[in-house]
Length: 204
Ligand code: URA
Image (spheres, protein in one colour):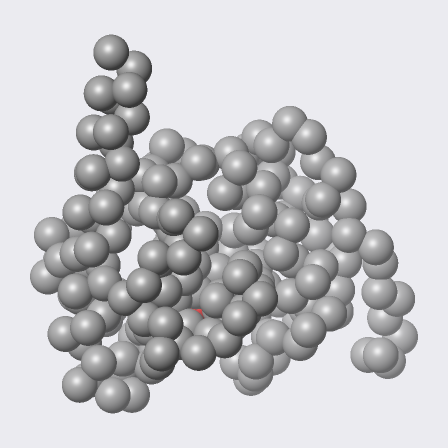
């Protein structure tokens, strides 16, 4: 356990009904884990509250922690480029991460941190109800689906709405992954449009 810090039981799980503004406030004042002691700003996520597509990364980095916005550093610029190539705009999608506070030195989030932060993401999914949720990288895949293996699973849609893809930082390290990353985002767009159309037809 971190020195001098008392882990607390998660209260986000009991939040009902899910309301995004309330949720942002809860995240902003969250002190459930020690990341709250070192953060500058929480990074709850950004995008339309009725987005059809949600993108989920791992955790904020230095620039995100300073601005309170997701994916505004180098990985974010690559994400913008990939979204553009896929025919999507940042303003069209809701972007967030499993962890809402920056882990020191950008280390991987700990199991306990993920466990305590995950209910916020689940409440965001319930409130926004995106048709397609892109899980970017193994941290998001494991936290949400309980499995790992981005290289094997990428491009697949699991449990009807979770599209597995690479984390933008992995694409930054290996630009050969860019084509697949763009193709996955394009697929997210195609599938979300298809699901919207099906829903409209079912209403008639
Ligand atoms: N990486 C993430 O996973 N999330 C961010 O917000 C920024 C970088």
